[in-house]
Length: 350
Image (cartoon, one colour):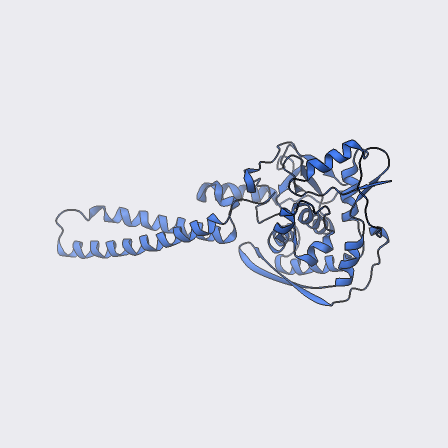
């Protein structure tokens, strides 16, 4: 019996893949199988607070979590076990299914869904809230990102407890919640970029990568179906990712048609970059666009303010000039703030 760790961490994928191809394995500590873990009535030895934006409005949720259960998930197997010199075909599906099918935290997952439903309502609005929650309230684990010796991903409960995770951790958590809400999801695996993202089933013709699934970036707030051009470090995603499907199936996210139309309107009005902006940057961009329109209108009105003017027209033009000067100062302040925030955003991490 061989056991291997195969997470998605920067600069480690290829080395671990080589271990697979060579038939090498790493020894794992003794651990409980997720299927045999207890399903207790959760104790509440701490309360974890989550903050995120949903439709550009700040939201917060508090969950009572159990550190003992967190420890049990930590001790559970995080490795894929196989016999022979190399893992069988389809091993990734079996590996990630282990995290999705683990028992013990169903109650807290349902409580979280109930909280999100209270914010967003039901149907596809709930799916949008789930995505916003994972994107926004679970920070990216930059410490693990830099620690290439870290070799295990987290169970969904671990990610909720830790309030942090890398792409695989956050994708697994989002998949768990969306599946609990009844949706059909897949994993997009980008081998060369060492990245994972979620795919959400959408109506025919609305999917990405020639599939029936819309791309959902999990590492930071990004609209459904929008694929970033670049990631931190200039990484680009492979346009033909591996698709990991799960047999249970589920609902289609029907709202995707309306979302695509909305995104086209945003791009037309604010530019393509608007789709990748944080809520703060979007708000500033919207204000800048409105103010630019107001400045254009003032400019038109001042076309008659040239040459020798009668007293009444002169006073009118002076008032217009004062308005313009004030608007320009306000606009420049917005631009400065926008640039300051934008410098800190170099793209989503891989």
